[in-house]
Length: 322
Ligand SMILES: Nc1ncnc2c1ncn2[C@@H]1O[C@H](COP(=O)(O)OS(=O)(=O)O)[C@@H](OP(=O)(O)O)[C@H]1O
Ligand SMILES: [Mg+2]
Ligand SMILES: [Mg+2]
Ligand SMILES: [Mg+2]
Picture 1 (cartoon, rainbow, N blue to C red):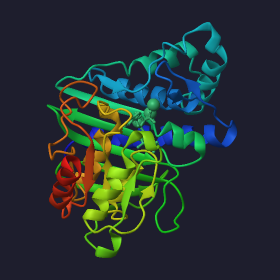
Picture 2 (picture 1 turned 90 degrees about the vertical axis):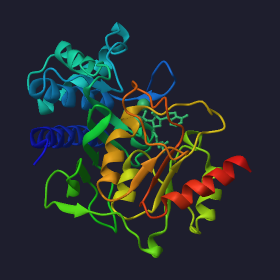
Picture 3 (picture 1 turned 45 degrees about the vertical axis):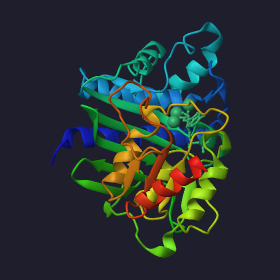
């Protein structure tokens, strides 16, 4: 199988990070640390990035990692308490680790986009994580702008009342699989074409999309049910598993020039594509992962079961020009 070492390593690292995140949520009631852009980060985001970057640095030392977080704030003297908490959490995975080592592992995620790189969102949906809702650990390998491996760990996700904790894995050309976390039987995953599964998913945070426009487009393609609102790339998982036919993320009127970050999408895109679905921007263009840490050549994201994609894009064109 192609990319077997990369796939295995990504699964192991994301599974360890998922356990760390769940331990933080269970044991210490995480609170938000505010970043410069006013968005939240927690002890678990830092711990997850440290654990995954350590694994990548050991197994693939020459591969750059483009991660969401960096350790510059944590290095400030005022952050001694959260740093000690992060170190304590990482020690559950890697015993006897020092705080210095943890900081260096986090900063291993300061790599830049090149011919081959990994991109990591240690907790996607931090607001969902803090609320007790959905979040995902998202890791992807990209070569020449093409996503080759994508792993999404969703510790709080379940379908049809199952036990929470699902891991999605995709390798380009080899399909998508679903596995319970932390381990269990693996099953192949396909998107659904069934008409009764015609649901759509969108973000919980209204400011991450355009909910009025999203509702209008969904209605135009015959989706009558209310949207399912879900944090993080778990939304890609819902489409890949056939629990939704569509995920819409249209530019928010509050931030029309926002360009999506690569780590918010790379793993999810491959998980959906390899399950038989389709992902483009709102104009039907493929997402371009070759330009840097943002999708500068794209606006909005449309994720579907494939069958309804062209109809959605046509409805979207109408909605935008109306
Ligand atoms: N204005 C705007 N538009 C679109 N996206 C934005 C915007 N601002 C932030 N972000 C990114 O949204 C990431 C979380 O997206 P979600 O779809 O999970 O949103 S939500 O959790 O339902 O609120 C979130 O990822 P995390 O920071 O990893 O949680 C952000 O990178
Ligand atoms: Mg964030
Ligand atoms: Mg994110
Ligand atoms: Mg994040």
